[in-house]
Length: 176
Image (cartoon, rainbow, N blue to C red):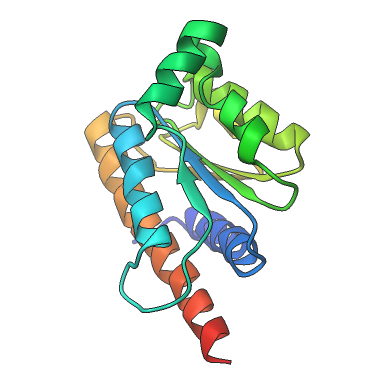
């Protein structure tokens, strides 16, 4: 059984991603560790193909460029590695998908703050309670668990669904 409030939030997140994708606005994804791997997974599914042939989607995993990450970390501090990229690539109407199982990762929080300043939609993908990330998010997708592995499993189910519906909207758009 799916929590009704989580389903409403997932639907709102899907609408934001579909809007950004169909309007060719950037979708930026960030997270640390396993969440960084998830960010890269999401970017691969949307820039490439999840299940359907359709136009590529403007998506960027902010954890993927090690030369940039180490330059930003060295020059500005590790906490700024995502915010600086949001500043560079974000646009009003775009989406930041901020992934943090605890909702407390400082670099993810700064990215969300920067995205809000740029009038981007912030979707927080978190665990139970959402942490400080919840207050910075337009939509909070909080998996109802405090267990990191279970939260990460829930995240994968949610983001695969989000990729599928975003891709379907793009495929339908290209068939019109």
